[in-house]
Image (cartoon, rainbow, N blue to C red):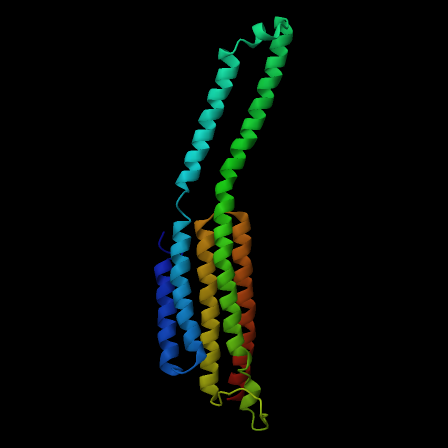
Length: 233
């Protein structure tokens, strides 16, 4: 089972090693700060995903209590109260009315019971999307750091303007910087996948897939830049 599930500790460890690598090569860059934030967020989300594997005990206790209360009310109304005597209705009519009322009560009870059960899914779903929102924002921050890393700046014909951002002029360093961005995006996808692993819910899985698709698409753009850099060597 070791290779069939994602290990949160290994994901966090990978993020930590990536931060150290960025600090070694680009100690003064903003990317180092983003990598540190990725480590912190990975730890928090790994803990949150693990917590979602546990049942919501107070809610399940409420469901059990509601079920027991419903059964007791049904038994009380059906067996203790002498409805046939109080109503003055003949036994045959009273029996038909009683069967119809019992069926309606059972249907409503089942629907209410199912609604309570699905409440736990909805609560966990809201918690997941609250966490994924922060992860999505970090993905866009990573993308912002690679936007100005243009391989065209390596050309001898390139002429910066007065408002041009600071460029990395060494091809190897530029390729490594972009590769670090791609790795960070890959880690965000793995962190998101922890929630799909913890919560077996179709809506959650779709949300996780959206995060993974976003990070993959942005990483694909980065690798197009890296390919252009490699072609210039």
